[in-house]
Amino acid sequence: MSFSEFRQNKWVRFISNKYILILILFIVWMIFFDANSYLIHHELDNDINGLEDNAEFYQKEIDHDKTFIKKMEDSNEMEKFAREKYYLKKENEDIYIIEHEDSIKKEEKR
Image (tube, rainbow, N blue to C red; front, side):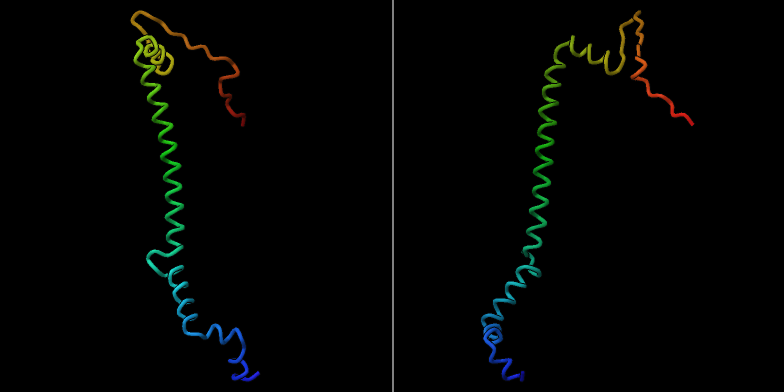
């Protein structure tokens, strides 16, 4: 196959058209090299999705904390929380912590 026969091929004539070449270069430029390329948009979309997930998580945490604060407005609930979480006690009061055998972590045997 000689060069002239190669140039007469239907696909070669189509691709060698200057408008088609410019279009192909434009598409390649827009996908890979431009500041607003598809690849950068794809990366930014992934970042946005991750941030939206974080916002949803933190909104749930805020709602949880608001209910906890509302619950702590009651002095009896606050006392109960302080006793259970931080083992606080009143004056002249003794507290005994009872641990069941199945709740104690066993030391590993060597």
